[in-house]
Length: 232
Image 1 (cartoon, rainbow, N blue to C red):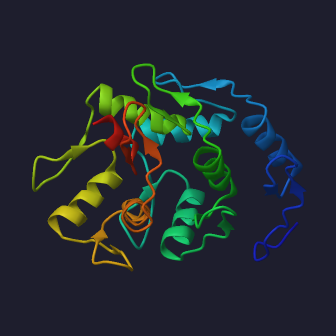
Image 2 (image 1 turned 180 degrees about the vertical axis):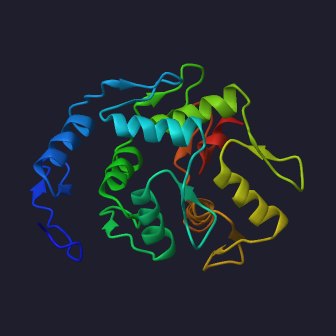
């Protein structure tokens, strides 16, 4: 018996993604669920499927019943699983992001997020395609959000100050912080431009200071830094 005061060594490593586990049984379950696509449990409410019954119980509790018992002591985020909260605290509040992209300055706390970043951003892999418009993305969850907000008009998060509404809680927090509280923590080192989203700062630097305009019109010689501007 191993003393409760000691951590068990993760002896069993996955040859596919590198994740390690304390037992062979946990490794087998991981491979079955993540790499072999074995997902025998189907949700009665939505199209979610999973490998373990316990994962299904967690899904129903968090997604359909709103149960998120693990609350962050620092901010107002809450989670359905304890490991998700630990990852949140480590990456958001402790700044622990050990995985660094070899191509750009992106960092993250989990290897799977890095694999997804490289595939979508640098390799252009966006396998989830919208059946209504030409939108595509790297995550199934993002596609669902796109369909719900853009095509079905579902925006359950409403601002208490103005009539702004959105499909994600995080977007509402950004809106309140930047529009109503004037928080723009991302500042340009070259000029006095500041913004509330890091991605907007990157776009600003690339287009204004580096003159990068990768999106080119097929009809005339117009070019721009954002795909949305090309459609206008």
